Length: 116
Length: 112
Image (cartoon, rainbow over all chains, first blue to last red; front, side, top):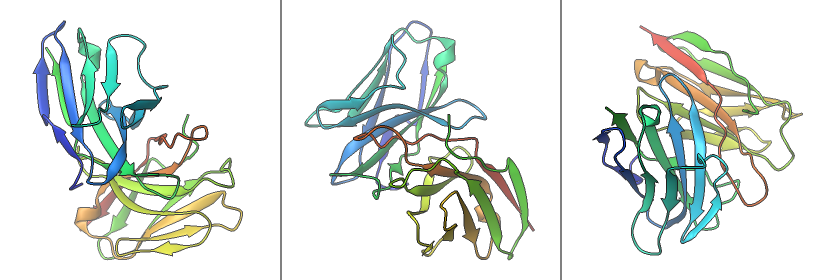
């Protein structure tokens, strides 16, 4: 999983606080995807972004969750007013410029979010 | 819902070939089949992908049936480090989005 960098690796928040998760894609990749994984489950798609654009946010909860991928800097997944149910592993993946169906996504090692 | 179905779990003896099947009977003509694995709680690791021809790389081989409704991932000489959950994914979504829809995968245990 070298290349896609996520930080922090572990994040602990109390209910009601904000969580910010960062993802730096592989060099040369301008497509970023966020997925969430609950314990003992598969990954669930959340959002797909290109630089400065949200392409598909069909998996994002309607409230409290937002994502961005600015022209400069990492992609950010932001969760406001966290609740216990937000506890999960959040994975970021990236694919190359013009990534299509022949361009596999490469994943980071995730951020483990724990809500107290 | 995932467009693939896989057995929940499999065991394989160390040194033997591990053959992991996947059904994707509703696959569209332009959709690729991707295989990933997840070891412990790490991020999914890309293994191999293909459209209709069989593929081989340093990690594994991918056999896709002629009708493309199923495929098999082959790890030729399984080691203990291959113990992981293996996911078969068909690229999904409307045009312009390439999100993955993960199923529950196959939990492969390689036995010494």
